[in-house]
Length: 333
Image (cartoon, rainbow, N blue to C red; front, side, top):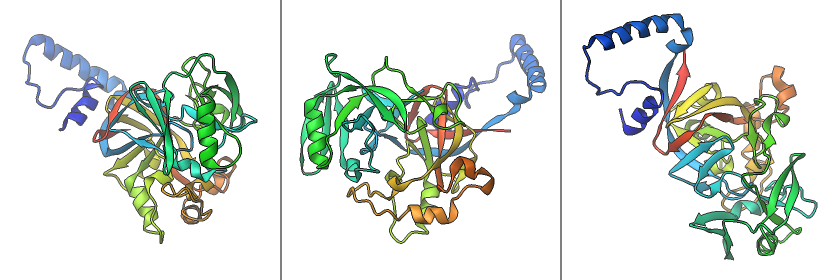
């Protein structure tokens, strides 16, 4: 068993594979008591089994903008975190303070936000980088923005950021806002009833985590003339070593020392037709092909409508750290 597997199992209090046997009376008594408890508690008889390996981890600092691949990340209630970068903690808004996404401005997928020390860098092809302080000035106004109809606050990142984004998009005037720790998150259950009352997000659509398998992507690509990448679907965790759509039935996962619970499938929209390398929206593929074979059961159309399903939304069960290469364990019967 590798380091990643041992780390995951140790977080459950399970024995390490190479630990020597003990013959003391106290240990024998503990084993006997444990056997009784095991028989009396059916839930404790459930086993973790490996179903895959973490192949990629992604953080999307600005909603609808370019993702940042990372080798490891903190798993928090509001999504993945690496240092000052947090998933969907920055948001582009228009003059009415409504969110702006790549559904309206496809070129947003070309904008990158990275962090080095205490400095953030906004960058895009053929555009001069803009450096910003990690800590937004407290004198900047806090704006009440709307994300999918729900109000959420964000501190304005200043005129330079607003002008940079507006100039790059060459469209309506835009501003950049940042979600701060003392601000109130949006309640996921107000967006989708399947979430628990405690599930929250900053600027993500509904869920703090999106999980997709390499095999599901490969199956989709086998049906497409022009292949697509995981970045078309903006997952946080990409899993290798499992079958296509295996993630559809993963109810509770242990990755590293973090635990995630599955909430619902991710419904797919026109954003998937934006090429992440060019910022051009086709309005057809891969959405058209997904609609041909990834529709929900007719009995669930009130929930999902006509949107195809691809990838799974997860929420936090317990925090921890995940790394590329970590084993992915499923809690089974």
